[in-house]
Amino acid sequence: MYPKFLFADLDDTLFQSLEKCRTSDGLEPAAFLKDGLPISYTTALQRAFFAFVQDGMTVIPSTARNRDAFSRVALPFTSYAVLNYGGMVLSPGGAVDTAWRDQMHDAMHVALPGLQELSKLLDDYAVSTGFGGRTRLIEDSGTPFYLVLKDPQKRSDVLAPFEREVAQAWLDDGDKPYYLHRNGNNFAVLPKALNKAHAVRYVMDQLRKEHGAIMSFGMGDSRADAAFMSACDYAIVPSRTQLASLTLEAL
Image 1: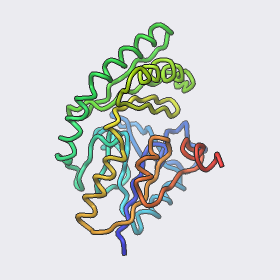
Image 2 (image 1 turned 30 degrees about the vertical axis):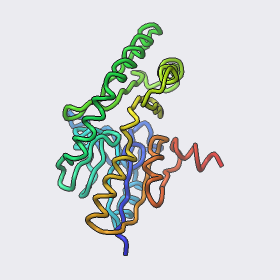
Image 3 (image 1 turned 90 degrees about the vertical axis):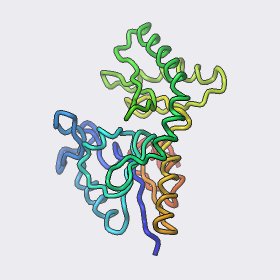
Image 4 (image 1 turned 90 degrees about the horizontal axis):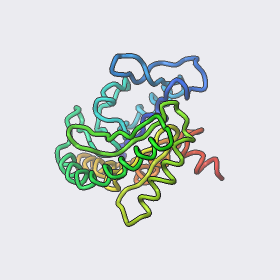
């Protein structure tokens, strides 16, 4: 028998914000803000699915959340965790995997000047257009990881020109080792060295050292999850998500 492991994205995969829930019936809080207020919820179907996959496999979260935000997720995880788009790996028990940390720390500091350059271009464009938001450099435990830009009024369409006219134009002007990700009201710029797929493969190597041959599943909602899902033996795509619209619903 192969030990089974499910590498699962969290937000919009195992739970979502109240606005994205199709009904208010049967919702339960799944993640919380720093002040303790709930920010994300599971449906009864999602809880049933989580119980189903836990009966026979180990669930390993693979998320863009940083360590603090992950600590405020109420779902029970007992093994490894992939955080910060793959920039951080937690070992079973919650300690930071130092070998992966050191590798990513060096790679991210090499990528930092480019992120700072693009951050200024995006913020200047925001000022020139009257956009109310600014870029944020996401860091965790002293390591800078990626840029994120969100519209304060949650209008995802207004982020399109930031992606097309500023970030993509900057990438096209030379061979720059970064990539773009936009899903709803979330636009991120990431170094190519930062990818959930790299961290998932690293964790798989650790699991094979511990267990021998394994069976792996990947589950996610967005285009950015596709790479780590394809690194697994099987892929699970929730319906009515960005990734479903690009694959299953596009057929």
